[in-house]
Picture 1 (cartoon, helix red, strand yellow):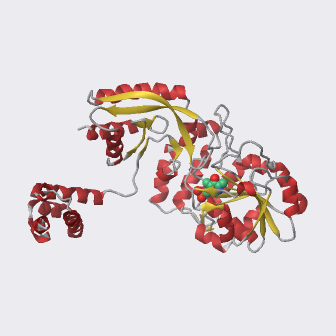
Picture 2 (cartoon, rainbow, N blue to C red; picture 1 turned 180 degrees about the horizontal axis):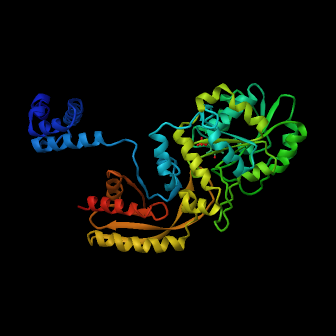
Picture 3 (tube, rainbow, N blue to C red; picture 1 turned 90 degrees about the vertical axis):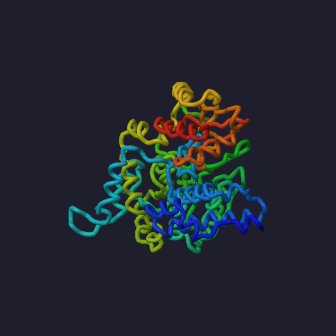
Length: 462
Ligand SMILES: *Cc1c(COP(=O)(O)O)cnc(C)c1O
């Protein structure tokens, strides 16, 4: 109670040197908010009995106010260094874009653009036209459409093509992707009636055939992106499913998740289906994400037969799912890189990082270890240990990506202190703790990011 009474009054604090100085650079509202926040924290600590007398000293209160203000000034959405080794880390923004796109993105962001304007006719154009041809060239589709994300793509397809009618899906494909995308729920949202066929582990062509009636709107294949069924299993090859659909006059749609366009020879477990193979096998419509294996911005791409895609372009729901110019600029830029496969492998970060071999990462790691050791006190021990990176993004759960990790330990600081200290830097460095070491995966930390890591480690050990 005594401490509670000794907490300074707001007016007194505002008149002190620290606040007076802060008021010369920050708006009054901002300083006031920081002071209030600090006082509130002191009061609640006093009530809980956890407040130390030292925390009420003038210098300590001033420092808290400055820290609070600095925190409130920092952007909430900001870059981080990804040391987790998860290449498509959904919480860290999934794929990062090819550096070559920077100029183009700035140009579109800070100027007017041809978003819905056709310069050849001087008339209104379509925002969807900028990437449609590229998608068709790369995948063999007749037509294509881009929406907010793959969840939106599936929702639009179901709403437009299957409201009030039946959608036939294998029981083994009623998947959940990251909690908020669950096939039965999206189906309900789209007004479609789910017609489950087969069993969890085995579904046959005759299961689909027996389910087709006059009420059937489509056969839907959903890629099991984030899990694997092994053992006594059977699924219907896409070409057979496509042939069945054709024979019965029912469209066959595939949600293929990742949007992979490449052949991943030499990377074990990278057996993600390619968009162009599904379409070549006769699937009528595919949907996939822009920011998984494709390595572009968040987007959902619908590609396939013109007779099915074109009606979607006129659907009411599309307006609510539409993408903005920055997404389109990033997607066009990314897709252009795919026109030359070597350029795609070299420049699209997701493709480049997933192909890095353990031998390449080890060489890189040895250089990093030397550099980091030079910059840090001798009490911090930096070593290189082998490990495994993950594809992430709910893709390829079985892919094995052997890697090398920087292991950081010290007799003076715990792994927890390194983890938390680096996470709280102006550019947060995100790593993990295993067996008492703090670990950073060489695969996902870019060369120029090591400067940030070194600064962070210096700050933690200062
Ligand atoms: C990832 C994924 C989705 C969701 O895609 P978003 O682009 O994240 O909306 C849907 N279906 C499958 C099969 C997926 O792998």
